[in-house]
Image 1 (tube, rainbow, N blue to C red):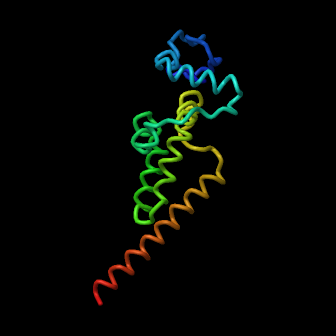
Image 2: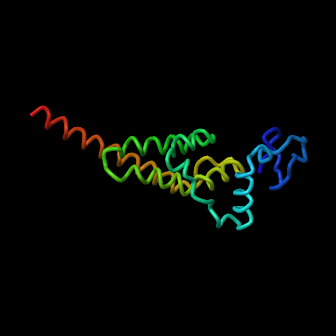
Image 3: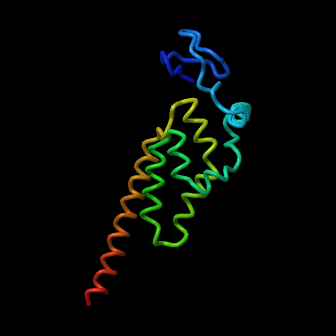
Length: 148
């Protein structure tokens, strides 16, 4: 964990930065989040957090309010691009419910808003591009039907 004031490395669990004395961000969290983070750390991150119903119903908004705006923008894009394809938008909500707590943990501890794996980034960009092409084709077919 990094100190939000001076950037020095802080051992997990310290209440104050050893370099500058500023209170750790974790100390400002509610009891619920402290317990969730403790469970994740106690199981060496094999535990990914419990189901989060608020994040399930409001995935992109939930991620945005927690400061994870990159993930929020990606989920908004996926929602927008897949809204006409039935169950595809459901993925966004299931992801939010299942991974929200762990994502928030990674964001708070490592300031990791998005994956650092370049392969996953490329896969996500390609997925969004494919969805854009599908949407363009889908809407262009609809416009031709209307014009004919």
